[in-house]
Amino acid sequence: MNVGCIPSKAMISVGHRFEEAQHSDEMGIVAKEVSLNFEKAQAFKDSVVKKLTGGVESLLKGNKVEIVRGEAYFVDENTVRIMDADSAQTYKFKNAIIATGSRPVEIPTFKYSERVIDSTGALALKEVPKKLVVIGGGYIGTELGTAYANMGSEVTILEGAPDILAGFEKQMTSIVKKGLKKKGVEVITKASAKGVEESDSGVSVSYEAGGEEKTIDADYVLVTVGRRPNTDEMGLEELNIKMGERGLIEVDKQCRTSIPNIYAIGDIVAGLQLAHKASYEGKIAAEAIAGEKSEVDYLAIPAVCFTDPELASVGLTEEQAKEEGFEVTAAKFPFGANGRALSLNAAEGFVKLVSRKEDGLLLGGQIVGAGASDMVAEIGLAIEAGMTVEDIAMTIHAHPTLAETTMEAAEVALGTPIHIIK
Image 1: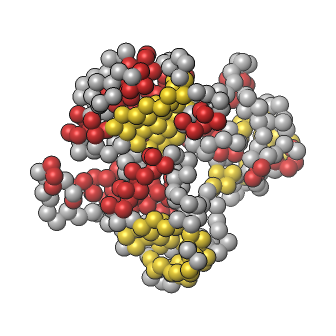
Image 2: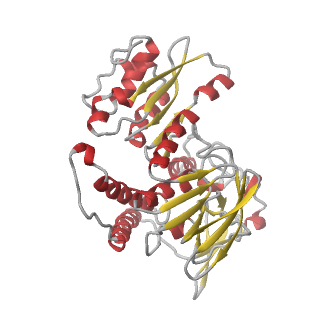
């Protein structure tokens, strides 16, 4: 909320508005001398963060939750020491939930500085870079790279893998890559970042690709190569809590650690590093502490990337479903055949539904296109409820809406499409 999801989406929104103001000639909107007041854009972002963090603090106080600020260090399984700049206080607890999140991974040859920045630094810049190099083509790097490209930056993305956005299907990412190319973003895959030389005015990034070593000059280099769990320097070794790979804490289905009265949630446990997953796990842990029989069920965790256009996936992909032994039907419906998408001048993309062939049980869904982040909720609900593609097809969707594409994809799965040729 402070340095991740919320401020990045605020800046992404700024980028969209600026880009649309400059390039809406096709819809009859011709704007002259459109300018971006980046200081005001940053103030807008900060105001959104302040409203939400202030709201959460009010909710805590309203529910009689005491807030203690400082650094925590476990003394034993029932004691924690909280330290600030002036004092230290010991607290006894019956139960504890560890929710310390994660931090960006730092590459040894790219030490963070004024011009070698992480995602937090990218959201706090005082200026729009003329040139920006992004190391890492995952969702964070691609989202922020897209945002700055929309605001006028010349962006280069260096990715070590054969493709960007590895967590999403190639059919989806190909549309995003097409959009990046249109914005002038250069994507270099199978690239190994070697080092950086920094000056008062910029950076020179060296990398190897295709057997050649090259350099790029830029104002800043943004490093987004993953995140590390914040499980160090808090005394977990004093408790002998069972740890897994990469500094993650091992937990059971109630988010309980190997110490029965201590729980852990979010980026510090295995699974997708997503805020909504952490929030869900927090509810499960709280219910377990309250004596409920709640357990985590990761059947339908949506994954969203706020690129241009947006990407969203929930449940199983077609490939994953086949790997799990299902005989499936994969049905797609294009945004280009949807009235609302055309009226928004956003015809790129599609909805894909993956269902069990024998009975139409919905197993997963993928969306690339405008509004994908909102539309994916319907598919997630359908999977959680054990619905079939027929249930979705028989649900009356308002017209004209983007959500109709989900209904139409379900009709394709049934073999009875109306708005595309069978």
